[in-house]
Image (tube, rainbow, N blue to C red; front, side, top):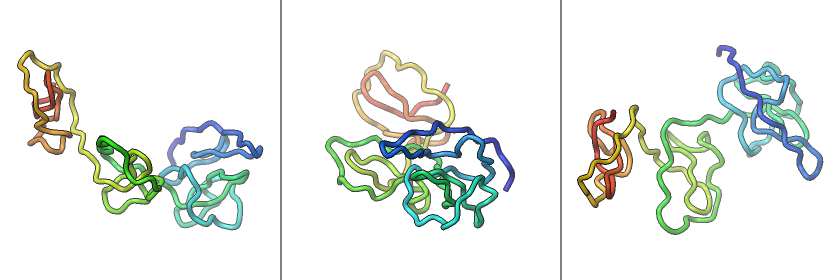
Length: 165
């Protein structure tokens, strides 16, 4: 794995007085791929760390509950979470980040909790401004439903596949 530059996140002061963060703390050498998970959902290594180099097995040095520990990294998968449908989903947390989901699924809000869902495909390019022809129908919901390079773009009254500009 090659070294890379990591952005340093802001440390937050907890009510208990501890520092927590979801990324490397200032001064930490961030060399492993992935990023620190938002929540600690695994049992961390028993020894502390100062940088990713102190961690084995591809783990990252992350700050949780007043201490830096080695944990498996989280990864953000490509794609976009589907739009929420009307109403709320099951109020349970089935995942915390994309790394918790199988295959290409992403950890998305279901309206109340989070669940693993197939992502929408986002193709390159931008949609042109809608023309004056009213098309009051939803012919697509995301780019993955459109052929070749076409994108799912807004019309004057809905969405349809069209060539990007």
